Amino acid sequence: MKFKLLFKCMICLCFMLTMLGNQALAAEVKVMISAGFYGVYEQLAPAFERSSGYKLITTRGPSVGDSPEAIPTRLMQGQQADVVILDGESAESLGKRGLVRSDSITTLALSQIGAAVKLNAPKPDISTVDAFRQTLLSAKSIAYSDSGSGTYIANTMFNKLGILDQVRGKSIKVRGPPSGEAVAAVVARGEAEIGFQQVSEIIHTPGITYLGPIPKELQPGFSFSGAITSNATQTQGAAALIRFLSDPSVSEVVVKTGLIPVTRTK
Image (cartoon, rainbow, N blue to C red; front, side):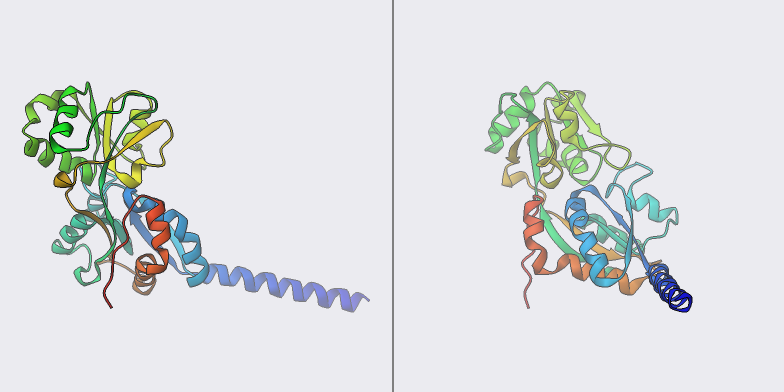
């Protein structure tokens, strides 16, 4: 009996050591990701880890901007990552600077800028360019992000509408995750009358009314892309993650998070 008990204990011990060994051998893929695609990534990451055997180590930060948390800033400072997932234009810029492999840049989803007001607040008209311009002029305060959409709004859209001088003093730039928050959260607290950000970052925030996308004539044609960094140590895992996130089978998740799937030609 003692021999059988000892034998069973040895079997259990071997099993536990094998499991621990497998966990220890799981290669880590380091990911830097901005907020716009994070909703998709957060839902799909567990499935990727289960199917691939890789463990994802995630760092969040904006695609652009002067924040020390911004992905370009992190890479320029030498912080190591295998994959970046961020605004498509920013990915191309990183490629030109040699921080990511240009031939690895893959569009994962298309995106639009949307608008929100506080829950139960009057709904302003943003259906046409003229109505949208008047809404901005009438608003007491306007919030936008410190990432790609906010940079476009502050540096391009206000000028395109010819209202930069009128709205500059009532505009608020909101620092995003990880140390900050979504623009819609500021709107929900009543700290800004109207806010703008990528649709995927707005629609699931409690306490707001989503007004819809801004007029198509003013949409900048945003996208989110994945790319392998130039200092990647897990290139195979990085490539596998990009393939997984760009596969047509994940389109339903992409749509539910407020993004637009990419139509790929064979």
